[in-house]
Image (cartoon, rainbow, N blue to C red; front, side):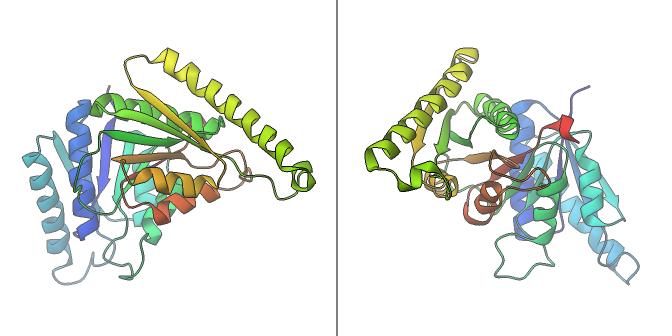
Length: 276
C-alpha cells in the first residue's frame, strides 16, 4: 500500500501554505493526502469544535482544488504527540513554520521544531506560499547515515519535480585540530582532500540515478551558510536531522537547526526510519 502524505493544519497562514505544498507534492508523486487538525486549544469551549471543523474543511477544499486525493480527520490529543504518531505510517509530514499559538516574530514555532526533531521519516516545514519556481532541489550531504536518507528523499523530490539536484558540502576546519597551527598550504591540501572525497560520494549517486541532473558544490565554510546561500535559488532544501558532527543523542544537529531557522523556502528534515 502506498504511503500517504500527512499535513497538519490549524487555520494559520503558514499552515495554508503547507496544505498547498503538500497537495502539489501528493499530486506529482501519486500519493494520497491526509489532512489532520488537532483540536487542542478549544476542544470543550463554545464554538471550539466548530472552528476546528471549519479549519479542516477549508484546508480540504483547497487541497482538492489542487487535484489531491484527500481524507481528513480531527484529532483531540496533544498536537505534538499526535503529529509524531501520524508520521510513522506516512511518507512525510508537512507543517507550517509556526501556528496560531506562536509569537509573530518567530520564524519557527515550537510544534514544527518538536515534530521535525522527533518524527519518523521526512518532515517538511513551509513558511509561505511558493512565489517562483527555480527547478532546483538542494541537499546537504556529508556522507553520514542521516545525510544519505536526505539524499534519497531529495532525489525522489527532484525526480518528481523534474528538477536538478544540487548537492552542497560545507567543510570547516575543526576548532581543535592539527590543521589549526599549520601553514596555509597544508590547510589547502586538507580541504582539497575533503573535496575529492565529497565528489566521489556524489559520483556514486550520479551513476546510480542518471535520469536526474546532479550538480555539486564543495566550499570551505560552515554548512549552514553554504545551504542558506544555495537556498536562494531552490524550491526545496533537504537536510538530515543530524550529521557527522552531532552528538548521538541529539535529535536535531546544528546544521538542520540552523537551516530551519534561516532558510525561507520549504525545508525537509529527514531521519532514517530504521533509527526509530
